Image (cartoon, rainbow, N blue to C red):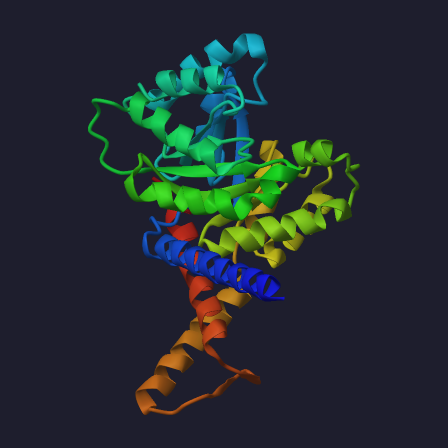
Length: 339
């Protein structure tokens, strides 16, 4: 009886300690958040295709992901990393998140070679994307290899890191992975900035069949977005693989935005406009947020307490939502402005 009670106390203390540590990591993430980089549409571009890479400048996607991984055949990997190196220096992309996705850490030879070559660029990528992260220790490896690749360089600011969650074990380990990423961000060449849900690899891993409404992925999507937001990180939703299905894309994008995702992966330029519209605040939403913030400030000055706005009682979470809408609107407007 005593042994059982002692075990119960230990379990409770461990749970409290872990909860405290998780909250600490979340607070640190919020305190050290970098400048917001919108990634409403994250467009993949094969790294070995110079013609497609040059077209990036004509597209309106928030983020162009120059790919060394799935979009490149094994015998073209060397060509891809050197082409990306050239494009980073040659292309003028002032309002675009210049992102590079390296190969999976599961193939350390390829991933390390990607970093060695690409980090020679005079204009470093703004965002480094790492696919198939399954455990926290892999982020430690990325941090060490990135530091080695940048050795001897005077780098003004940390590179943003976006990781991909693409397996059952990764989903189960997501809290620990993000906690490690935030911890490493204190003294690392990167600062963790977002999480991407890799739906197709995830389906293959668990033996699920992709359906039009993606109902088989509902739990995984909700866990990814919830955990990412707990650490104050962006969450980027699954690919809509039928790039000719505009209505399906719009429906799935709006669904993802309602869930809390900040953006979506796209595989074709024709998907960009629809996705970015769905992940942008509507004029009506911006008007609501603007008026709510003004009303709140007026009530604060008058010294009054709770108040109603357009028929609803206003509390702090609703005020925070309004401020987030305005912040996103302002950031998107700056990035959409002509250079």
